[in-house]
Image (cartoon, rainbow, N blue to C red; front, side):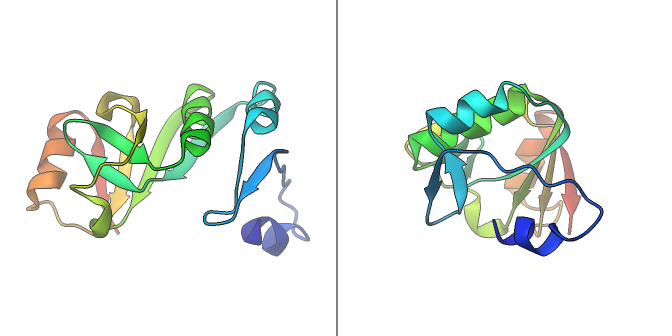
Length: 129
């Protein structure tokens, strides 16, 4: 929502989903958002996550947000997760992606980190930012 406001006056086309707005993340979630997503396809989906666990995958505590993230992954050619180091080794109630569902992870952890090595071993490209 904040980004949409900031770039709304630029030459970039901004499309907002309908649905319930989750206050913590300002994400559109729920059936209205899922239904709206059926009509769109993205070249690249940029997503965040609450937890990264090398066994479970990528998780969030909110089932509605998890469903929207899953749908976005389905409708994108490439999926990139933006993950700061505090999210590694954590798992929450709902998984929205297995390791094999994600193409690239951008993180602040270096390649020596064992969590990063596990992602790379599963075929995910890890980019240090």
